[in-house]
Image (cartoon, rainbow, N blue to C red; front, side, top):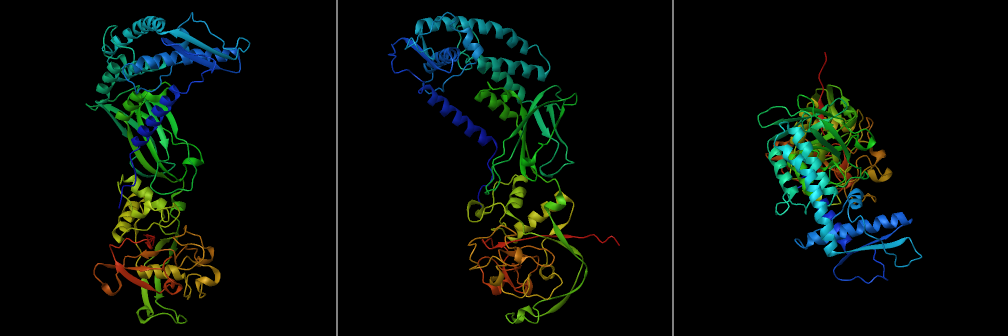
Length: 539
């Protein structure tokens, strides 16, 4: 076993690293004109655009961001390049004049400012910005409502970010404490007393499932009017999926007087019949100006819901019902390969429904994800065995039974492993065939995945051999993987009977009446399982 799913927050920190790297690279790749010889003691900004106005705007923005970054790197040499909004750039260095390296080309321009003049302009800008923000900061201590405090804090942090001052503007003119750090500290204190709860429990959900987030404080009191960020995404799984990448769906909802906010499930094919993650949190990072620290504040409050969504549960776990009655199992008369252990016998069975398909990697991954497992079958880490539509392998009989118990709890149906007699009756499908499809060996019509089949050298996606389906439409009852049963034939302690043969076996092993007993704790690459569910007799 090995760890299968990382926390969603790991994706956030990876994204932040990429942003930091990209920002740093940008600071050393400005579109400088080769004809400009830069002088020490000046900051430069370059612009090239489709129009003169565009070139001027780009050059001024490059200058301001270069100067801001240089100022920050006096304190932190590894700091990423600062960005500033167009509105902030327009308010700085209002009297600066552009220079054209080629006086006849108005589409290529640069600005320059002395360090001394920049520091004078920056000081005046900082004083004005601090004066506008201080009343809002002072109001935080007077506001009683949590939502109002957070809304005010978000506004301040966004304005600092938009002006490129998150890591520069101090709370006091001659102080050292950053304005942003003070606000973030206040926010952390607030968030430490908040509790986010998602109404829908982890597991299987569908069209009738309602998703609500509740926000309360540490006394249990509701937090009304709070903006909540809701993110739906397809999580990264340890298995290899055949679906294309689906963009996350982000929405902003607000809690009502009871602290509740309804969250809609994403509309569209991309989120149907998928394993999904819902993350709810505060909404500090909803704006384009959001900083790494603002995203960390959201992460501090974030909670996740892990689900597998099915729009039709019956179709997702398609099965065939076998009526109660007396059946013959064991070898059929024409099977000359059968040994004495396969002698014919008569059995009495209650009605049951058997899955059309063996359990796939995707279905098993959904189970692991919704129970927040931190491990998975070792073959999930092997590209030969971890494709979503392949049958799951590398699990013990107990693992299969744990999955059956979870599925029963989620659906209300009673799932379990079949007995070997139930498996055999279902595979034969009211016929007297040697194989599920008839008496012909699998090589004659390419009916199954077995050793030497000529197509697959690993477990095949379920249903790859239409010619191998039996009369009831059951798939892969022969070949591909041996299937666990609830039986221990010959009553061998610690062993279980498996049926069906596998991709590692020859045609003789694929016969319906054949079986073998293996250690119940075996977790090899050639054993999987399918489930049956009990049928309630309405009479």
